[in-house]
Length: 171
Image (cartoon, rainbow, N blue to C red; front, side, top):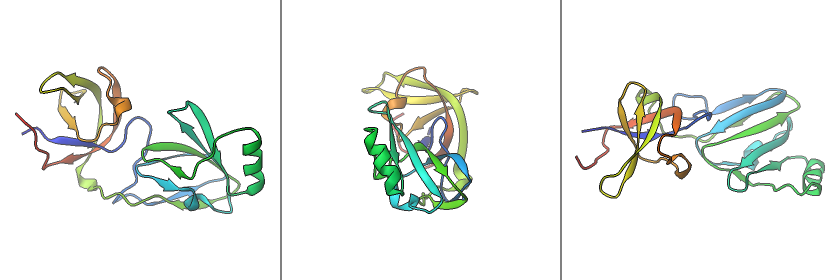
C-alpha cells in the first residue's frame, strides 16, 4: 500500500506544530513568518508591532493591518485592503519597532512522521484523475490535501509533509 502524504507546507512556508515552538519571536525590523493555520489579527495586536502585510493571491494585491489606529488611517487613505485573519498556509511580513512574541495556532502534527520533500507534481489520469508528487529519488506520494494552486502537472514543489499511515486508496 502506498502511503499518503499530508502536505503541511509548500514552497517557502514554515511549519507550526507539536514539537515546534508555538511562540515566534519577532525582532525589530521586518520579519517574514509562515503559518499552517489561520491567525486572527488579535494575536498580532502587540505594542511592538507596527504593521502586518499579507499578499492576497486572489487579487494579486497587498493587504495591510496595524494595531495603531493612526497607521490604519494611512492604510485606508491609500485605498489598501485590510484583513481580520491571516489564512492558513500563508506567509506574511511583520514590521516591528521592538521585540515581541506571537503565538501561532497549535497544529497536531507528529514530528516523528514529518518528512521534508522536494519533487514534481504529476497528474495521474486514472479513475477521474488525481495529483501525486514524485520526489527526486523517484518515491511517490499521494497528497491528501494538495491546494488547487499546486495542482499543476510538472510543478516543482518543496516542503514538509506528515506521512499518514492509515491512508486508503485503490490499487
